[in-house]
Image 1 (spheres, rainbow, N blue to C red):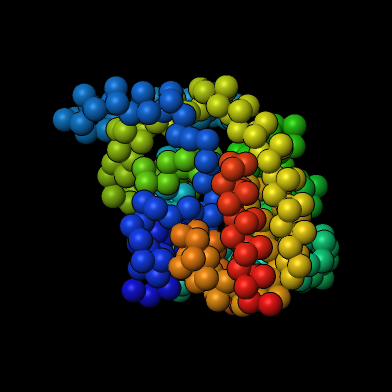
Image 2 (cartoon, rainbow, N blue to C red):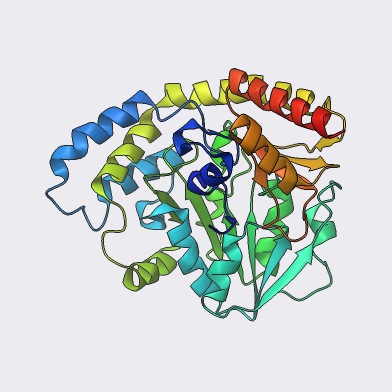
Length: 358
């Protein structure tokens, strides 16, 4: 079985650990450990009675709830079979530009979506250990008027949060700007740097969102795009009908309305994340980067692939190596923030592994 390019591949990890996938503690996929919320499970169960009917092809109810949630017109919203499906159509749009700029390291699926439509890719590498602004990363004297920009915010894999003030000037410089906000939900409203409110003002701006990470539903597959209706109408014509099933639609509507779960998640992350960062940095040989998301990128003096293997075999614990990010290589790994007790298991396993190899 080949090495996975994404986190959360428990079948692959279980073959190395020599245990059932259900026995693994997964830090490789950045999924909210507090979910799925009870309200969402109840909504899914209630939707079983709808399985003998096709979904509404226009997803009017879900789009209405998203419209209210984000205070944007319903015509600017398109649900999808995970944000990965919508990224495919983004790739087709970006392929119409002369080139697409990617800041690297970048989420690997961007390459997949762009190369599928023979898009020209211009990579701009940046030092993940240096906190420099977008203006310093992207050349200010270059003409990008016929270029696209694909950027995730918070950034994956570093967790860096770009401010609205950094991104807004780029909307006037690039022909098309796509912001993947898959992890923005993990920031409370007063800390969010989302550009959703700008979509009506900038017809060249597309926002991608995921509902599966925050609500712990990666197996259900649900995301949505917010963009000018011209984009969304084209995508509807390109894609298969009914990409979102009735269970996913019911789960999304329930999750959007569950303000208690949203607040519980923000409170949990604010309490637990600093603790995890501090204890990671207490392990000699590790350096943990600042992160606005629910994960950390960690620099290690030890081979991350060797460390990953040791943790699987001896502790049945999976971390994300960064070999799929060529710019990072074998000296970085990424870990999700999980519950306090699970985070302690991670720290103990890392300490034991490092001590045994010194």
